[in-house]
Length: 328
Ligand code: AQP
Image 1 (tube, rainbow, N blue to C red):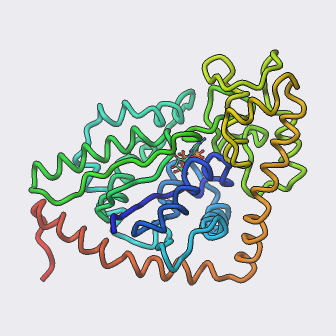
Image 2: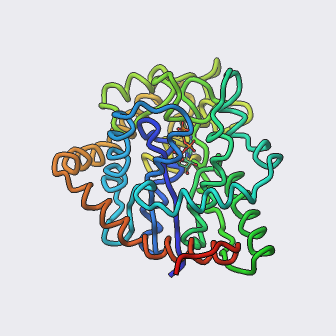
């Protein structure tokens, strides 16, 4: 079976953007691929994290994976920091990357813009992401559109290593959904929905209670028009709400346009809120059960055990090819 790897940072509460752009695809792919899904805690510390919150969020993200439908008997679910070769291979790839290519990363530019001091980890994090993927020779990486550029860098680094040291790494392909690859912020149709946005009204968290979801959607920015029409260039906010509706209610964009023709935004937003609430209700129920059972610790332990052999083997081979003296 082709191999899939992806990860999510425990850098805040997971949003509907993370779900539609990434997790929904994880659930589908586990049926046809060998899947490895990580909570990328080493990535989360590229911006300051409060220790207790990091621990709690790491557990929460893993539990949300399971609540969303990832089956630990089909896919390996683990925490990145539980498998030490990630950090070590990350360093090896950092030495292969060029400053210029890291400076071009738009996520780095976005996250560092306007800040007085920016951590070096934020700058080099795409090389750690490359190591995460290449450690397992993943064929496919399901991500949202925002990660496309990092995946390109991963491909470049794999090719660079293969050229210098001989063919070893699989050059991975991105797997990006056609609709919903970039869910936008509720208060600004030009910015992606992001879990670390300081304004909670900008995102729908997967664990938001129903009334909070209703309030956030009723207050979501639209435009001065009345038409529910999919036109991302001219109506970015309404188009974004339509994408969310399409995913949560399993309707096409055309069906949504037809249903709300001539009705303005009121009825549309009301139905959208109910569709999101119904979509998240079973996930939230299952999440509460998983957290109270404590089973997530066993799932993470088993996941790390499953992947460790491959990770150590790859790291050893990469070090050997690069000329490290290996312990005998
Ligand atoms: N708005 C989005 N629409 C579609 N997909 C999205 N993803 C993130 N935001 C959206 C996808 O979710 C996965 C996890 O991403 P991540 O946690 O590694 O970091 P990120 O891409 O930077 O996501 P966030 O939510 O914006 O986190 P913060 O705020 O911490 O940086 C990825 O596959 C991503 O594409």
